Length: 311
Length: 323
Image (cartoon, rainbow over all chains, first blue to last red; front, side, top):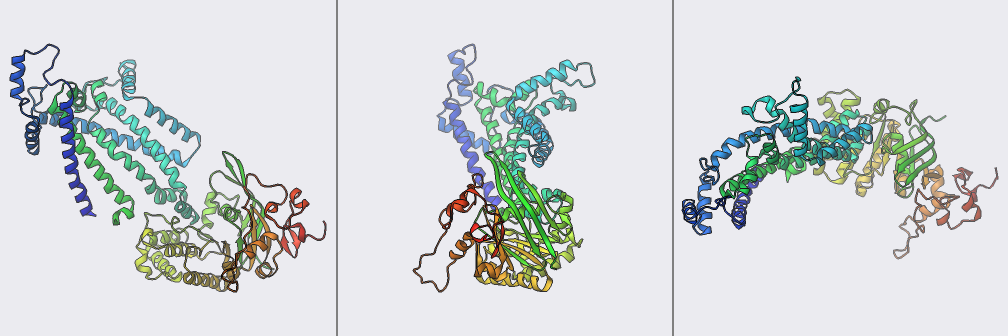
């Protein structure tokens, strides 16, 4: 089994290389460049800038020198944030994004899973309909709307009450400043997890082996926890892998609304500024998270299903 | 006076579906005497399994029952879940027909056995393990200690079926409902399992309900037979009478469909023409009349009751004395 995971980890390397390759050339295919601002730069200055950043080298040479630096952990200088290297920007922003993302995914599991499971156990009851309805609402309302609504509620309407919360700003990660962004980040995932776990528990309860367990006279609680639960968790784990990777690498919308210094903003800002190295940097980090998350999901499958363990 | 261990009376099972109500079981009355094996035969979808799912309290959520099913002083159809759970797996056990999916895939089979003993016998893990391994040996599982620690996917269908059977027998139940218990087994193992069931019946007075398509198994083990068609019992009699002198045309048809060793290899096996009816669109009168060779006008208009006429059967041809 361990050799299987070692192999999976090794397969991640060519995957990551492919991401680097595609991302590098796709960025260069986009029109414009990092120095195209609102005011045109004089041609002589532009030529100097391009020479300074080796943008006048042939593309293949740029790619291989980038790759060489990357292997040494150097993501290169940012074109836009000129006082920083991309490595520095990521090192500053990533921990913030990871903390928020991790809090959000844990919150989403702690709320979503019990909601979904209890809804499944009381299928077609008022409780079930309430959970399904709320989950639908949580999925269809975009975070930029829930974010603004919560700011309006807790930052404006409840101003002066004990329930007032900071409407934005980071304040070095003070607990109160994290509540709203983490909540907004978690909400759609609460909804997804509730929906998936409800559906998979309903399915698990219909299996023949749950019928066998009931025929043994086991209390329903034991039937659910011992026999149905593991089967019901598999689809949830499948969803959680990519979802966690997505959350840990930051959210552009949330980080913009709440002015949080994470790396989520760089995905969009970097692309708009044609900040080649920054876009490459955050994309590679994102891809690495997805690869690792999928590997963890596979390991959890082995925990849940003995069949996987032997293959 | 023989003691009735299970007494089903006027059982109806209805499923509410999006296309309307399905009458899976209608007005079924059956009983099982102590130490007796009752065979239930009929084609797929005739209600044999659902009758006993209802008895076990294991119907799907959209299933509703009326009638009664008395077992050891309890009406199983009206008992709450807590009462049912003291009976199920303990005094009343069921062997399911699909061994490939009837065991929990992520649990070792040993644990799936011991939990029954821990639940009903209050045994500790060690005693339960010894008891479970002994039972595994009894149902002809080779190397029970090694198999005890395996997961279901590591066992063949035949072994899984025997695990399911062992599970049912663990607490020494008074009644075992076996739904196609030998279908997944090869003939030699099938014979061993049937021997074991016969031994339990004769030495321990265990009663059985044997639900099956296999008339050979019924002939070998059952004392009485009930034939079901379209959710109703159409004939019920002792096993000798059923095989020697079947009265209902459906029973006659079923028996005619059984190949015999004395048949010429080229002989065409007779079949009952047509299909069992859709339970939502049952024909008027006798449910079997569209497929019956002996049909006459009254069969299309009126449903024959289950009445004495050679055997207890539901056919006008045999009801000579008009009520």
